[in-house]
Image (cartoon, rainbow, N blue to C red; front, side, top):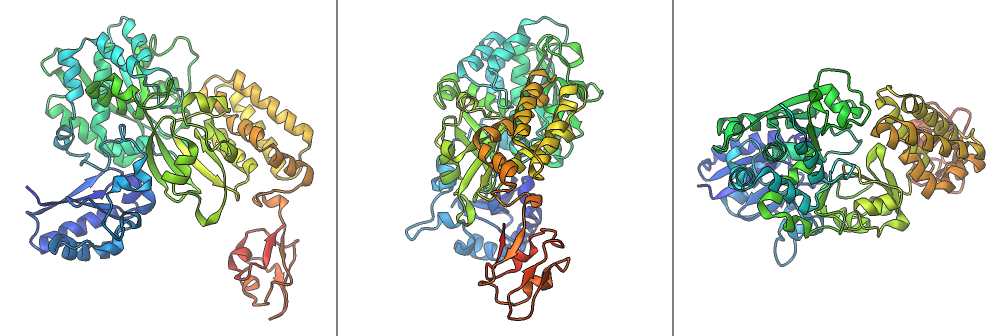
Length: 595
């Protein structure tokens, strides 16, 4: 037994900030102090507050150290682990009060969250199956195999109200029932871990922090639908997730939790990890299955749907990582427990990767129905640098934006659809007044054009034409008639593309046109970018009354576009200016403006 446990985040974010070196330094320092039999260091998954990494939590006190550096380790070991005194300068500021050190769950970031899919992330060592079992792991699978029929398992999932968390929101239990109803000599379960949205890292964090919950859930799905084999399709750019998945699968096989005759029930189930090459289109279920089969990842026409003819032509159930991550809790705690959270038509919780212009960048899991305002202002800590919130992009390149006047919209499937947005897989990109919404739409179209598989003409050609029309607008060469043509083309692509990538590609354009049409008009009519982003519509000028003639801007200008004498107002030669913005960053007197 150890008297203290030191949990260090081993997710991708903190690993990139040298958390592994912190773990090694901590272990070496503990050994040097003779504490190796009293203190255990554990590498966990993501805690959620990625903006504060590397993160360390010391139990039993539960104190939360943030932005820890290797050079801080000796002080933590000496003061905290040896002398019992917390190192207050490293504590997360919000946990420090005059009266006491607050628990993490009492902070603004955590207190409105409800962790189900993320329940073990940042809590257990993901590479130790015994820790997962200690936190009720594989109890749900045992319960299914020893107490419930496959039909009863499906009914529990239906009663829970769980809907697919990959973006479509299709009822999970209903999807499982379709596969179960089809007779075949072989059926499959597929986990879609091909998370490709810019700014999204929900599924990656679950796989890195709690891989066994996905294994358990897929086995439960296999039992319920009659499948004996499963594939986890994960992008190769997730090396930590891939490694931990393989470790977890090997451990589960060693303990008889995968393979033949699980729990002496007569049920067989095996799992394979399949690496994807990072094609966004392979997030679409039929393209994903085509890729697993060894072919180029392109979508297939539907029907037939995968429940009838899926992987290798056999009935297949496909869900994404977050959907599966909810299954063990639903089985273990009951459908009523899960259904008690959320809204009438959107039950449970939703994980979001919160990024962009937000103070608390990270991973959050909130009950469905939580408003965008609560997420941005309370959990996210608001917009940095005193800027105003402008919009939040949900669903990445397939989604839409929620403007400031709709901040009190409860986040669930139907409310987002009603305002022309979509849930998506869970990327939530926050934008402030300095973002140009036309440029944002162009950014997502850039991505979609690159990621289109090219199989169907509406997507292959249509998205390129959309991209060209947006560029025409940001270059100041468009007319008002072009805005009408832009909208018309959006609807054509949505109605005629083969798969979800093409059908949703115009969403960022349509959403920004709907809520920020005045910005489009300003680009077209006034030849101005209100946010000061689109370079071809910008010019830089020096305010004569503010310029001190310090020459700093002239010395920094890479093309020599600024001239003037010392202690005299300077001027910018707009014919030379490349609009790089270095002058604005350099000036200490706010004398340079965008026009």
